[in-house]
Image 1 (cartoon, protein in one colour):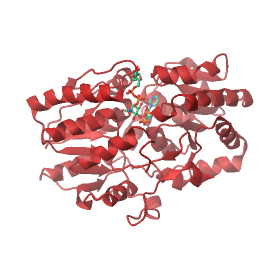
Image 2 (image 1 turned 90 degrees about the horizontal axis):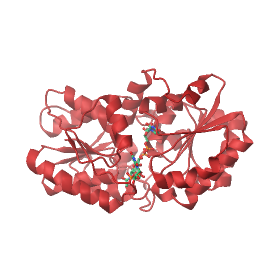
Image 3 (image 1 turned 90 degrees about the vertical axis):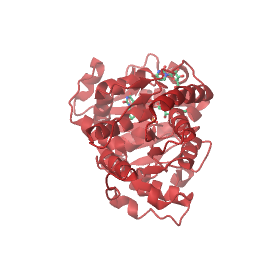
Image 4 (image 1 turned 30 degrees about the horizontal axis):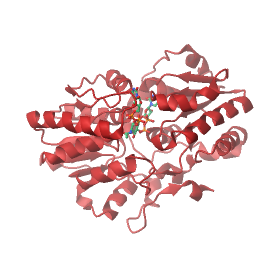
Length: 398
Ligand code: UD1
Ligand code: UDP
């Protein structure tokens, strides 16, 4: 029983749902919490997944404990009635950790997808770093996306035998989606598809950036728009009203800024492929954009995804507005700086993560064998379980 509730969990879980449903060994019942409503449904509809159970817990401006309590309560009921042999949770959202706890309390094995990411700072990202550490403690099978994330788990005392390196299923979703040539509903985006368009794609939503930092992001975007009139800035804005209230006011009246509702995954990945530079605080976008050879500037102080930083396509720049403006200007105006970052690398996957996931689950139940771990050549040099967590922070960059 996969359990998920937000947009990124859905994008990363759908490849597993389809691989489980194609396997002769498993019956797959999908439970969604509806932590996100519109942004979750958008993904399920695109990939044709109809959940078997929907807790519909979403509330405007919901609290973390509210999400946790409603998930525990709703999932408890489903687990009592249906008694799955295992639950599969993904990542570090509140849905994910609540789903894991609910299963643990029923003595049902927890399978954790995207296990072992660590920033090394419990306050950032918040609450995700805490969530994923809690989930690791009660997980039976850890599916780590990279060798580095496996090393993090081993350092925390988890047996290497219980960890399989699969690659990240986001790359499965990305590769499957890029093939489909979708049209933009918003005609302003369709007009950007000319090959010489200069596009800055921006997303922001992180809880620890909300407030002053996010207001600063809005001001920085406005400043970039004024300084770089030939650049079109596209901001598909998160549904969270707290994000909108912080980031949108400085952008009013700027003709080279396009603000859209959350885009369907097909539209968003097409837009990412058309973009010149990506500016984001998103986890999933940090994983996808390097595959497309896009320089990614990450508005965070640290990252639990150091692989693409090491590969040179991702740079941590924090949230200081002047620094954001400076870093974007450098990439648009210094071709050497741009070409150093614009390399297509695939540290996060090869499109076979769901296949490795299902093989690992089959081994857990004695009906198959795990596949060889996903390996990225670029990672071997930096992956070593003897050394401290390989986190990267803004300080390391400067
Ligand atoms: C959640 C996850 C975060 C993940 C992010 C992906 C937690 C604690 N956080 O954060 O790890 O990176 O999703 O986007 O689990 N809203 C809507 N409609 C939607 C979705 C959200 O209106 O479809 C609004 C609601 O007002 C909601 C707010 O956005 O209260 C925040 O949503 P929530 O799921 O609580 O947190 P995110 O910041 O989205
Ligand atoms: N995404 C999308 N539409 C959008 C913005 C993002 O489909 O308008 C996708 C993006 O490709 C990535 C995922 O949503 O796979 C990232 O979600 P988000 O940034 O909300 O969460 P995070 O990855 O930070 O947890």
